[in-house]
Each structure stands twice: as C-alpha cells, then as structure tokens.
Length: 295
Image (cartoon, rainbow, N blue to C red):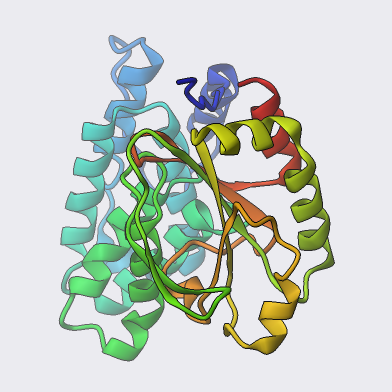
C-alpha cells in the first residue's frame, strides 16, 4: 500500500531572521539577556522563551495592553525554533502566574488567538494555542460566558488537530440515516468540507471526482472521500449532493463547526493518514490534487 506523505518545509533561515529582529528592536519590557556562550539558535531560542517573563512585573505590566501585546508577539515568534519542552513549560509557568489576574488572562487568550490561531497568526499552532486557552477555561475566576469562545475552540481542536488521532464524527448521511464515522486502519481519508451555497465547492467537487488517481485509490480501497456540509440534512441539501459520486460517504451536520476546525471556510480539505492520524487540514483543491499526483 502506498502511503500519503505531506512534505511541510520549514525555512529555518527566515525563522532565525525573525528571532534576530526581536532581539534587535527596542523591547517594551526588559527581555532576557541571552548569555554570549549560547551560540546555537535552538539553544538561544530555548533560553529566550524559557526566561521571557522573568524580569517583567506581570501585576503592573497590563496597565499598558499595547506593550503586553507587542511583548506577546515577541514571545511566541522564537517558539518556531525552540524545543517543545522549553516552550510548553514556559507557557505553563506564565499562565500560572496570571491565575489570579483573570482579566489579564483573558487578554492573553485573545492575543494567543490572534498570534497562533487567527488569519494573521505569527506562528500557526493549534497545540500552542490550546496551551494558552486551557488554563483560561479551567480558571474558576472567569465566568462561563467569557470562557465560551475558548471552550468552543477546544472542542474543535481536540477532535481535529494535526499530528493526533482523528476523533469520532456523527452526522446524517444522504439517505437520512444517522451515521458514525471513525477512520479505518490502512485506509487514508480525504475530508471534503463543503457548503450548498458555495460555488467554489461545486468546482472542487467536480475536480476531485474527475481525478484519475483519486478514482484509482478509491477503487482499490486505499482511500475514501468523506464529504461533509455544516448544514441541515434537509431536502434542499439532499438535492445539492444528489450528483456526488456514489463511492463517496456524504453527510451533513448543522453543528459541524463545533466539532471540526472550519475557520478557513469552504471548500477545504483535511487528510487523515492510514493510521488514523490527521496529517493536514485547511488544504485547497489545488494542493490536494498535487498530493494525489505524487502518490
């Protein structure tokens, strides 16, 4: 069986440049002074991230939200080069220090969303974003109403995070039957996220359905296509999916955006590998077809 591989290339030089820029600018607070004896970029990043907040009085710093926002961006930028243990330990310590400052903790959550999860993210990372927002949701000093947004994001991402096993989905299929989906060992899955009101979705469906390599892999059982709509499985939706290929699994769930990460809208594709691990998400049809051409 041929495996589906996604090659994600990190340009270390650009990351290093970003880290150097942080060190060169006039910082809003006293940032860590990295010892000259530490010359390796990864080790320097580890030190910088680990000690970033050591010299900052967090009880006073939030009097200037603008400065904290700038500092937070400078904090997360070198995380692209730092080791995971250093990064997650630093985040845990930082959020622990803010435990008794619920308003400030919420401000950091909003900055984490902007810098790690949003359209203009400095470092796109679901894992890092979760590390910042989980303490917010766990904090009893923060009201449920203010936590709701982050609880929803946790629900989306825990089921749907690159590099982790894909969670179970329940939806209604095009015959109106309640359906439960879990990836099957040894079979890759393309999840096609689409919407009845989306003209680009129609074109993406036509292109994927016509791709000879996709047809070959589906025919051999190595690949399945799961087409899902964040919609009610009503008569209008059934008409919309009536001409979808018969060998695709097609479903609808009006609450799909609470279960999967739909932040980029539709059409969008996710790839689950043969071991049930989410290999990639937010892919365009162009990228998906490029992957198929290389398998």
